[in-house]
Image (cartoon, rainbow, N blue to C red; front, side):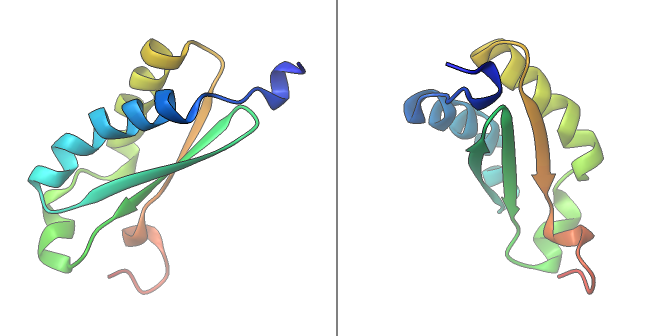
Amino acid sequence: MDPDQAEVGEDALGAVVESLALGLRADGADLTATQSGRQILFTLHIPDEACAECVMPATVLSSMFQHRVDVDLGPGWAIAIDDPRERAGGL
């Protein structure tokens, strides 16, 4: 298999998402992820502005998410975070 097209198992990715989502849920947010090749896109789900103020910025979360992916799935994965607070108009 071409390493650029590697697929991580749904269970393995789900376990990573679940471990990262636990802290976000404490602040009223949630997390999902999709994979394409060697990239994982994490999507933050932040329901309202009050919750948005509690969740760390994507720039801070990025290093934490990358570390978890490296530990649980191995090196070589690129991650990105879709943060609704960074979109035009915000929440």
